[in-house]
Image (cartoon, rainbow, N blue to C red):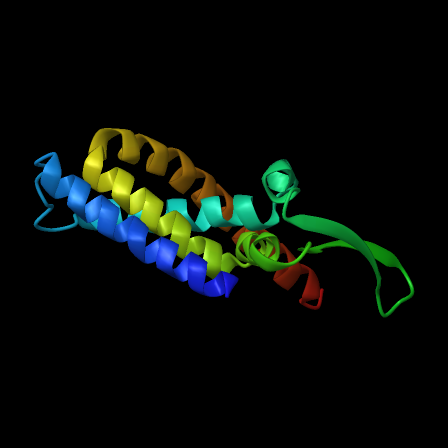
Length: 153
């Protein structure tokens, strides 16, 4: 049942946004410039990672998630975040820990912001897109370094 509530809430959010756009007379974008789509994609990627994975956002996840110690195959213990509680609290925890789920919500909210306040949205998207670009470069460099170390001398 809680899943139904959140699905209906998501649809209601869209309906409210579309009605507000019409009510306040905002113009509909006739097209999405490629650079804005790229910024939106990269910002969604980075914000999703922050919300679902980063320690800095644990304060957002804390009311809905709990840390558990899990034993790894080598006998070491690691902390793992899992949804807490039951009902709506658990569903929110699942949404916050799932990059696919959170990504849809984050992309939707960024898109709403982009339509309603394009300049503000672009500034936010540029900041998070730059962070995403930096992260992707770090991953690329680590992969190259690992490949280089694997090559015979």
